[in-house]
Amino acid sequence: MKIYTYPDPILRSVSRPVENIDENILKVIDSMAETMYAAPGIGLAAIQVGAPIRLIVYDVLQGEGRYKPHVLINPEIILAEGSIVFSEACLSVVDYSADVERSARIKVKGIDRDGKPLDIEAEDLEAVCLQHEIDHLNGVLFIDHISSLKRSIYKRKLKKMMGKEA
Ligand SMILES: [Zn+2]
Image (cartoon, rainbow, N blue to C red; front, side):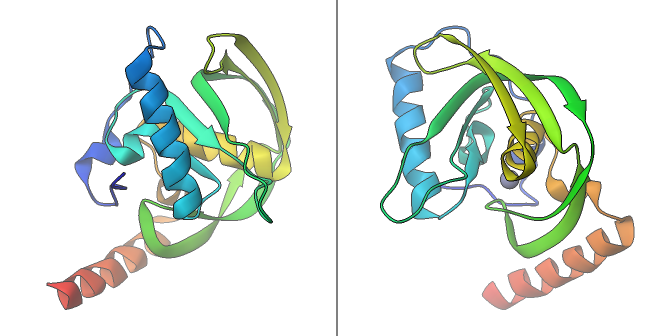
């Protein structure tokens, strides 16, 4: 699948809840997992591949032939505590990473690909990853959490890179 990148306005969409998990949604889930591993990345939100639905796949423990994508539909953060600073990157924000402060521990509820309710307790990298991906469902990118100075430096860098390509 094609991954949309900043500043494509589609990334600013607020995704809508998944109403029922049909064949189409299952296909999207499988293609998203493939796209995430191929990139490679540790998480992918549906809006990044152009589908404005509240669906994410993630896998923070992949590697050495171990691939078990987690699927989370209609996620909702119900508890957040502590704080952690982590250097984040994003498949939709090319050639950039920056420190972002987020909650260190979260509880998330949602449903899995079979429609079963999920209750996830996550900390550290997994908590960061889930907050990053859930942000995408609300049209938020990790660069929205950094200082406007840093963001404008990145915008200039991006303009230069795009200029070279054109
Ligand atoms: Zn991202």
